[in-house]
Amino acid sequence: MKDFIAVLVLYKTSLQQSATFTSITKGLKNSGQHLNLVVYDNTPGYNAGLTNGDLPMEEIGVTITYRADAANGGVSKAYNFGAAEGKARGKKWILLLDQDTEFPEGALSRYAEAVSNYPHDKLFAPIMMANEKIIISPCRFKFMRGFSLNNITPGVSSLQNLSVINCGMCIRTDAFENNKGYNPAIKLDFSDHDFISRFKKVNGERFIVIDMKVRHQLSTTEKNSAESDLLRFGYYLQGERNMTASAYQRAFLKTNALIRAAKLSFIHLNLRFILKLFK
Image (tube, rainbow, N blue to C red; front, side):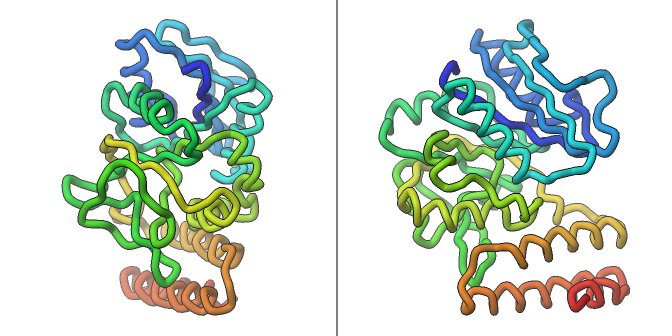
């Protein structure tokens, strides 16, 4: 994996608690491969025992570059930082990761095999499942929101009507740079769709679906408190307002935000979501 750098974003989770870290490193340990990994920690106060800089963990096949951001700059800032590290270290590929996705053993070999089989392509993505039946990435992107797919065929695909979520995306470092990276004004929601919207205009619509399934837990599937959902809704609105979109597309974004605010207000019997929308 000498041509790869991976970026793992943490928030209020330790490395040992991260399903992504444990599944990726398990595969590394068993394969004898080595990975350069940027751990970008958005936790307020960050993780005790870790300090900024390189942390060799040769026993599990990884060298970690740890970066603490107690101000929580968001995933966009994290991925841009990781891409800059990759460029500085001469890496050809950047692999984007979140903290709660389970990768199968041998996942990194699948990425290496895919970029070898399609040497001229710039964007690769696995098939991400929310459960055994629901494909959440790649997803159909219509009316400025994502819709799950019933199935998708591995191999060459097009971003014309599809989008890809952050975790698992593997991007050529020069293509990432040509796309001017992620929009730092979008901390979380819409960061991936904004990146893809710009990517297909700059680098083309073609991408490769890797023949590999990974399993991810969406925060929207969890029952959260009103305070937690209100915080997340704030990130949603921040992303919606900074998303690259035409006037026509922005009308859909506003409608979607209104529907979400109404739904959350009904769930929590709390009008603060509506008030936040119009604030």
